[in-house]
Structure formats: C-alpha cells, structure tokens
Length: 135
Length: 158
Image (cartoon, rainbow over all chains, first blue to last red; front, side, top):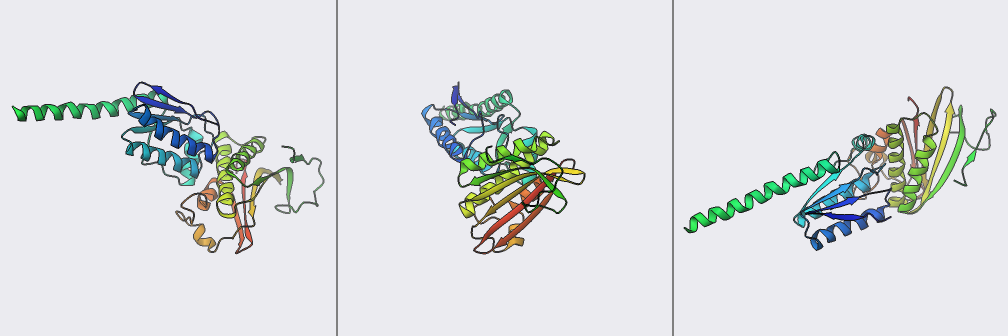
C-alpha cells in the first residue's frame, strides 16, 4: 500500500490511508526523504489519522523520518494521532518527544508556516546587518 | 478467517487445553507469523475478534497494539511463530486471550526482558513491559533454545 505524497506550496503532505506494513513504512520514509529534495520542500506533514495502531516500529520510523528530513534542511510535523493511539503509545512507553506533532492537517500547516516564517525572518535581518557594516 | 471456528453450546470443550480450568473458549483463531505482513494481519484479526465483546475503542486499540508488538517479537527474534487469539468466558467475565508462541532462541534473562527500556534488537520488538501495561494479565514461559510463549489477556471492564 503506497502512501501518496502531495506537494502543497512549500510543503509535502503524506497522507497514510490504511494500515501499513513495515515495508510500506520504510518505503514511505525513503520516498519522503527523496521528494523533499526533488521538490525543494521546506516542510513535511505526515497525516496518520487513518492509522489505528502505532507500534514500536511505526513510531521509530516516524522518528527516523523526522530526523532525516531535518538533516535535509526541512521540518516535519506528524498530524492526526488518534486519542486511542496516543493512549497506547503512552502505555507502551514509546517516546515521540523529539518529533513535532499537531492536531490535524490545518494545525500542521499553520505550525510549519510559522516555523518557516521565523526562519525566513532571520535571514534578511542578517543580510541587512552585513549591508550596514559595509557602509 | 477460514481457520476460525465457532464453539457454541454449554459443554466444556475438553479437546482443547483450556486457558484456565473455568474459562470457556468461545471463538478461536490462529495466525502464522513469519513476515511483517502477518503482524498487520494478526492485529487486525485481534481487533475484529475483540470488537465482538464489549471493549471500548481505546481498549481495542490497546489489544491490537499489544498483538502487534508480540507478533513483532516473533519476527524479530524467532523468524516464525504463531499468534493464537481466543475469546473466552470466565465465570462472569469475558475477554480476549492472545498467545504468542515461537520455537526461537528463548529469552536468557526473563526478568531483564521485563525491565523497561531493555531490548536486544535495537528496540524493535521486545517491549514486553509495554505489552504488559497494555493488557490485564501477562504470563511468559521461555526455554533457552526451545522457544517462548507469551500469554496476555484483557477482560471487558477488567
């Protein structure tokens, strides 16, 4: 079961639509990491609303994706973790603390937009400072 | 689904070794576990079976997640094995029993494997303390070089 990855402006959106095997998850990881460069994306949203179970492998793969995307210079946010899944993750003792999450797609887009805005604000400021110094 | 069969009637079934002497197996299913696809199959069947009892959707997710981890252990440590799912009546209670068995290497130090944060396979699978927290009852039998059998149960309103 392949996960569609759509481009929306500066972002990629991967919407998981059914249960995924380990092989599917690894394929998703590789596809996202590749696409983020190919499409010069600044952020990635992974929508897991349809996932009814997140076990140790799924959790680990999502963490891996997030870290790999950061190494590629973009940001990842996981959206749509269901309440039952959140409970199971906590009980199981699985940690997603180093991964950004948001309630749903809308919140995820807002989160990434904010993150990229704060990043872009720093860049022109730095340029201006350099300009003043030259004068 | 084809290997699933219904047991009805009041008679106690003696052909099958019962989980507990007073527990009656209402429904049973076995899934061969030898690849990552079987992990998905096992947890989906488990959720489906458990949904026939009065579990909340949170409890169904806990059961499915526990099955996923147990099946994962089989693939990771023993390559192949079996997940048996049983719906049981135990006096007043109803519940699901999950038995994950394999003929793998066994676990050298069970008490260590039941400690939080311990795993020999880079935290892929094992997670036994987590599985224990997801379910109401947890039992493990293991013999080095012979295999491992983990039995977990969850009762409705347990």
